[in-house]
Image (cartoon, rainbow, N blue to C red; front, top):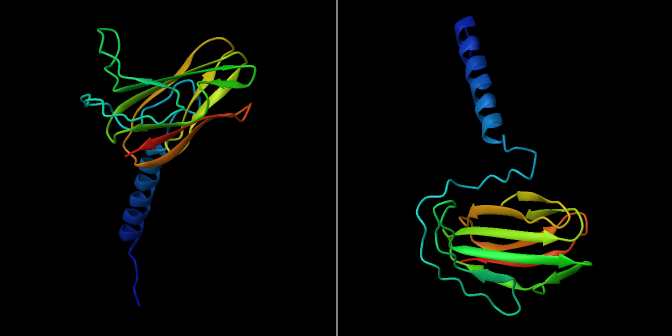
Length: 157
């Protein structure tokens, strides 16, 4: 039979409380999707090896500028009268690339990147963006929540 002393019970309770605090701090992503947090902290920019398949949202490499972080892949989508431009398709990026998705909608909505759990508010007529390091391989749907439009599928290889 195992008997815990009062000191051992206190140590176990302290360890459990510390673990709970660490878990809560790790899950503390802001509930406000307009403040999208990258899944990892951006480090250096890798060369662009993206291979989009037609039709796709605009995917371009962007040079770094003094005011913004160098982005490996810029994806831009516009929504007018529930019509996605460019039409829904797939965009392929290499694992590790820094990706920025910018969406402008004619109605207020919310952008969501599945698998990365990133989002941004889309005020009507104003671009909303998420930026993240593509550190998970797979196929991820990028959509709007209110209008439930699939904008494109992000393929990370």
